[in-house]
Length: 446
Image (cartoon, rainbow, N blue to C red):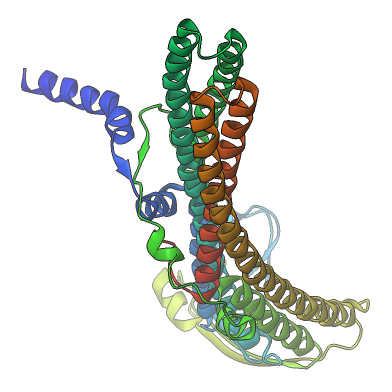
């Protein structure tokens, strides 16, 4: 019974876990942390880190001598030689057993292995930086999606407020029409505007769902309409804004993973070139062997059987060899490898410069757009205040019967448009500020 109960509890937890997760309130920081832990691209890159670690360990072990032990046993039915007196033995089964141990090491190889080891170290560092680069990209994408949800919700709230306000105005207008203070066309104009604003509410609701789905997809979560995000106070982000210095931000941003990865790749290219050049130099190797053997065709000097272990003892054959290998002509392959390594290094140098230029341009764009959106936000805010005052004046005149319904609905539509433009400029400005913080090395947060 206890086992069945545990199984039922486990099934219940697995069934309810998506729903429980959907009911949580997700902050921007929590979304980013969850994505870092569960994103498949990051997991894939972490595997590359493990591979680089394994290759680095292998390159370190390559400096140790190689050691091999071998054993062999041979049966021979034909002609053989008595190793004791070198006589030919005909058509007699003979057996032999051999054992040997061999060790070898390169004393000098043009430092190719040393540069190869350093290159593997750079590969590991590049893999680690690539993980951080992926985390940065995911953080920016999640922050953008998060702010788009907040913007869509504010637009939805403004649309619903305008819709409900227009409903109340429709009810007042109906009373005025029934009392004869307003023509029937005024009520028709408002009903038409009400239908239009109902469409705006539906569109805003759809945009909220679309943006919420986009964020859940970034988090690799199943879609849930109950997914909730925290609504932060972003006013403190906007207050006290001052334009940033592009060169100062760029100087600090050069330590970002995207640049560090390119620099490490260039360093690795330099090491690979040195390793390729090392193949042009002579190689000195040292090897040693220790072997012995037994043969059934070998007899003792007195003609008696030569015992197995005595033969192994007497036939010991140690040796030490120092070898020198001088490359003279290898179908031009070494020269080609050196040339390709040099071209690869030049390509990596250009790639680093390209990424540095791209980074500078991105920072320029972020700072410029932040200033632009800030001015747009200020202008839109002033426009909203002006539209509100204008609408209040139009509404009073409409209620008094001086204006018709068409002028009233136009004024209301203009007010909603002004509010939408202000909200869009506001959140675009906040996003650009977050991008600038990102280039400054400040973690994404709201």
